[in-house]
Image (cartoon, rainbow, N blue to C red; front, side, top):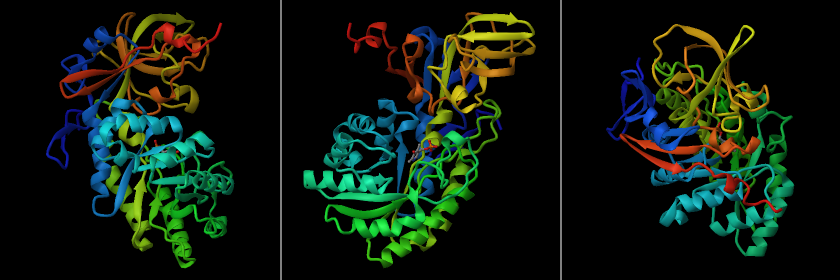
Length: 442
Ligand SMILES: *Cc1c(COP(=O)(O)O)cnc(C)c1O
């Protein structure tokens, strides 16, 4: 199957399985040449496909359309305002983990912000008072509470503001899901949630506060989980808890199944085998089965990576090609501060030359200019030969790329472009050095 294979979406529009493809020898994002984008906006540059993001989010909406459900995009995967706006326009809910992300949802959703904020769930193991207050005032859908202490604080703040707080306790189902240890969160030994066996007593004590509304139960077992069975196992555990809680008299209306559905980073970008539509259907079917006994309850799912990862790439220019001993290093102008996933999670990203290679491929290390051996994008990667001045694209960088970027080495963060069909818009300009130092006091 080629990247140009057209897939029908529910709304009749056709979307490529992957947004990045060669047109002749020139790598494009949908209808836009990457060479031209680099010339206009410079590098490093994040490039995203709006069509792909809409398509991926739509897969979740369609897969859960037969039941009462809300798809809450996990903002931390990519929190750029223009991307949040695009999703808000589709009626997305949002999973946030900070007061900053709440503000992003508010701004991105413009006139419709009341409705959008009403579909926000607030997760995270350590919420600050100002963040809780902001979310209470915004009237968010649900607080995912991760400890009894946090529940006490939530009751206190709700009373101070004179509003009732809807909460779901995030339970830890002790389910093992195979992923990188840094993004596995559902084991008894992790910092997240509360032991599922303690939940009933906590709900019982919470019922004493008139300021707390035990609206739901939530679970999130980790990220980049490619099998659907662990999600089903976790949700089944939650479903049996919901039965117990209802028999205790709690009016549980919402079950939050969390996010974490993974993609295939090793898949070929030009001959993709990974079928996103099938994966989401499989996921929805597994959750449907596991929650069959739930009765009336709104199901929340919180996909992040799956929606945006393969919609984005990091465009970067080769600065130098050099040999050290037996090794060839391709040093590019993007670095670990722009995309930290290889350094942080030993992540694999496919890399393509923007001008399709003609020459034989050779094994190279693609690295950034930062003085750390962790500053790499690929080790011993077979790639068509590239020269200084040429462009390469680091693929599948739309999730946890820009949102995990930093100013390490006093490097301005990358600019971002959103492509919609044949049109490209700059959605974030490159930072200036003046801005980098603006908050400092001398
Ligand atoms: C990070 C996170 C998500 C999203 O995870 P993805 O792997 O990007 O889908 C969803 N819910 C919670 C609570 C999270 O912490």
